[in-house]
Amino acid sequence: MFAKYVYTAGATAANILSDLAAILTGETDTANLSVSCDKPNSSILATIPAGWVLHDAAAGTNARALKAPLADNASAFKFVVLDLNTAGYIQTKVYETWDATSHTGTNLAYGSNVTTASQQFSTTLAGTVYLFASARFLLLFSTVNAVWGSSTNSGASGCLERSRACPWDTPTAGWPPFVFTNLGDMATNSGGSYPPRLMSRSLATVTGTGSLMTANAGTQGAVHTMMTTYNGIDQKVPDASGGTQIPFFPIAFINTTNMPAPYGEVSSTCDLWALPQSVASNLDLIQKGGLDYLCIQAAGTTKMFAIRRG
Image (spheres, helix red, strand yellow):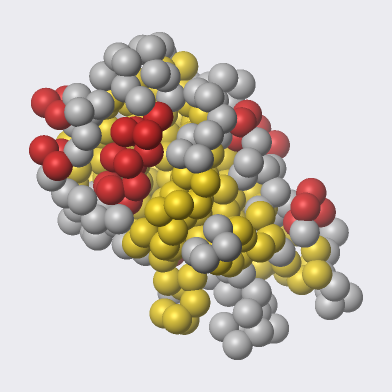
């Protein structure tokens, strides 16, 4: 699912929250959104279903908990609390579990409750939130008064489900195969991606800052290194018809402190890819394999990710 959600000047946090939650849980008609939605300028494309359901409508002040099943275990879920309780910020708090009766969660992914890694909104100015989602992930990307992302970080943020690459990492073992991420952090220092918990090579449970997952771009090293090294129009590669196309680099997660092996990757699950620097602009639409992808900026206007549009 891809949506461009435009809200009007004077929109309320409650209405924005309601609209974002509705879109992520399957609403496809902007006419059904709140009065805060600028309906003529908003759109929803749901070729791929949004894939999330409402889990707790009372997760807190201006907060709702959503869930989506894991790829390899439909009875287990990843949980995201959309939280607009902090004035001016949309937080996507990622939890391993969430109790809809007590309205509490376990193992909050580090960084997912930090404003600098979140998205902005305004109750004074008009603004826009781009939403990308499937049952495997959700990402939000906002702009207010020409500022993208948060006030200090220009990347999209949300929850990504990864593949399971290690033999111990099975559905039965129960380790959460998903992370909170901010793409701006990933593009600047390969940081910004944290699971609710992970296992170290000594079989210890790791949470908090120690659970940082470094993002690698294929065989090219860290995402931010690849984006800096592979820079400019000459990074395009020949296509099948005599033209050129932008190469897509798959994104895998590692944590060399805790495990000398990849934990898994997110490109095949979420259809999210790293691009060389300076080959595209923000919101450029490009095609690969007959499918549409939207370029979204991170860490300024030259570093981009490509994500499936629809």
